[in-house]
Image (cartoon, rainbow over all chains, first blue to last red; front, side, top):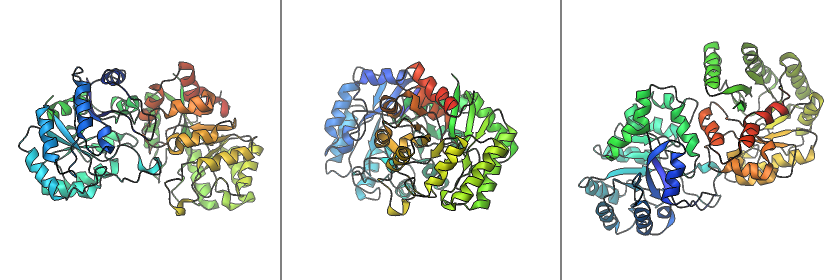
Length: 250
Length: 257
């Protein structure tokens, strides 16, 4: 069984991502051996308020229990508490932050207030670094990846916080792993020859999770990163599903 | 499914030279079904513009790989076009006659639109071998990156030299614009190497260039072979198209079988 911790419904406006229904997304994921997935909605990245896209997401996956919704909260907006309350009311397992796309720094006071409020809920936190390789994307989009130094400062400031980091590059993960242990990471934007063997030198398997960044990246390609890795079956099972089950209480 | 990887760097900044590492790589590749790897050399070890002695050293290392596993590695001759006609022709001849290298590899010594490229084209014609040109969209690059060949630059090179086969490297790096720049040029072959496996790009390349002009490549060790392979195997492509991309196009281009 494989659980994908980084998938999206909706379209990315700068490329030809398919606009799949929840059922179509699940069928696509199953073709690569993925049986469950955490899914967000791409509308929440660019629209001025994430809530309409979050509601679209909840409605879309209502009859597709294998897709677990991860709504987005925008801490740059005055009503972030209201957004969070809506996520709790919808019985979400986790919420996602997009600091770079939503134009706030992780050192902002709202972030610490959010962390304190989040701790009173059962929600887990996902912090997204990026959705695409910045080197060759649409020239008019200048949003940089979430700075690893900002994430490190947050993790050190909030030692009880234990988020999943999504879309993190391999060098960023290796740098962060030297300084902090209170995070997990999904592997879609980590790549090198023998990626997982390389990552496991700096971070234990219990803190890594399968992620494909579908529909931007090739689902099959990302799954094969794990499937073809020279690792014990038990280690692959941790990264492939067990860690996600534990982390998101699936 | 038979597979040839047309874009690898088994030795990278000096790593991977030891025989045990080479043997491990061959085993790894064969485990994934990759039956041959095109070794392009440790192209950035001495910076963007290696001199004659440095090129000889790098090409000799690549030749040694081939000698260790003659049934697995196929070398390309790494050249610096800025060194001029004499140096380019001398090193190309040495690599072809001594090692039997099957192509020329160009990195970022200069732009593919520069006049010095005529020496490389002469070598390619003389020895009847293709030229693999590093290519990447320069749109998001600063002015200090002018020696990176944009897909428009590489396409221009192919247009000016229709009798030389050019491999435009890095499908994801050249992107959709690069595919369209190569469209209609039968002597351009785009390789799938480099960058993260953006979904749908291989299919787009096949749609516009035809399955005959797309080659499977990884850019190992910068990329993971299984990821690149999965992006082709999982692509919305016919079995015939996958076979051409993964094997027969490169086999034909390099006259391997």
